[in-house]
Image 1 (cartoon, one colour):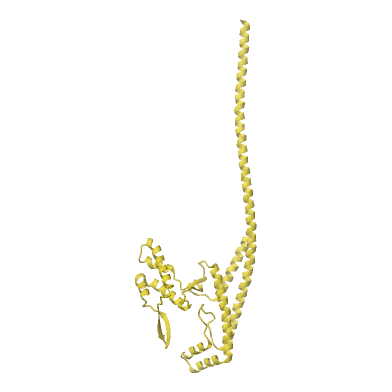
Image 2 (cartoon, rainbow, N blue to C red; image 1 turned 90 degrees about the horizontal axis):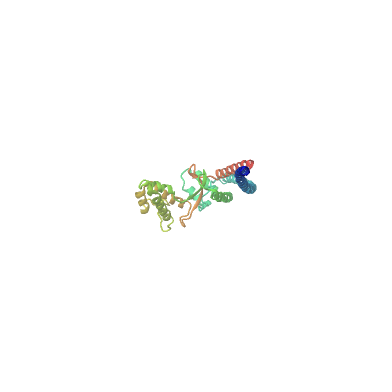
Length: 332
């Protein structure tokens, strides 16, 4: 009996020891799983960091390439600006020299001619100028003196020089128009005006006085488009000839049926806009084909721009662009 109890005690002690080992191993297993999860999270975080690092490296490389390209563009822009500056200075100098020679030639010939005329308008000949002088009131002696200048053989040479300089200035004017057409996007003090073209805003205002606001957009565009098409109609000739001082003069016929209908339906503003477009077409001699004539225009003052102020304006714009490019270059 005593031996049986001794064996049972040892077995119980052994079972207790085994149980404690099992509990210990369970704790170790839990700790192992926790550590395994932590290691997995660290590995995942490391992989994510490496992916971000590779993405940042690629972005940095792309930014470096963009910076190199931007620097190349800047250098090209600097060269282009320098070239344009030289061209503008040359044009400005040519303009000043031409004006000086024109003034000198005018003083020598005793006649005054227009330095710049709209495209399509022919220059007056010496005979036409003489005819105009004969129709002017004033002192007969002064008129005879003017006729003498026109009849003087030297006057013809001086007048020819003026015509040549007119051609030079017209070439400068055309180059300025081409330049402004390339850069003109509205909102400038100086720019290009399309002579004979209607102002759509005038028709919006006219429709706003007659229609609900939600209908104005479509209605004004249709009205504007229809009248722009009407102006392009070669069969429509709303002009009449009157006699002024014994000479025939062609003017817009204000009694034209279509013009009167426009005035009755949409008021003075739209009517005046069409009248102005017709007069511009006549002034710029484009009634035959109803094409567009371009004019250098001072939008701030609402008038034609002079060559001098156009050249000065372009020079100032180039200088401002140069300063801006230099500032960007310093930041890079």
